[in-house]
Length: 128
Image (cartoon, rainbow, N blue to C red; front, side):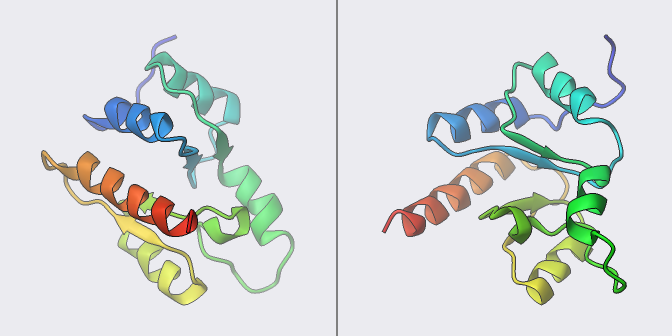
């Protein structure tokens, strides 16, 4: 299968490092692409993903018929300790709804190391 999407340079190495540290890796996307498609996309690059939350799952489990709109992503529902995103509005929602967001901007040579460092910091806190 040919995929239109490309992973950010350094993603494969980052996932391998996170997983070698025993850190679960989830994909949380507002996209309505199927879980199977997303799993195969990452699998194409040799990346195993622990869980996938797509737009359909989010709508069913997070919005779940609530009248008031919920944030576009709500990792706290799934006990996700660190959510990584490139959308500043998700970071703002994290402040309002109480979940930790690491905001990534344009790629730099150290973005993966910064995420790994933050993930390890949180892992140390959680293991105390």
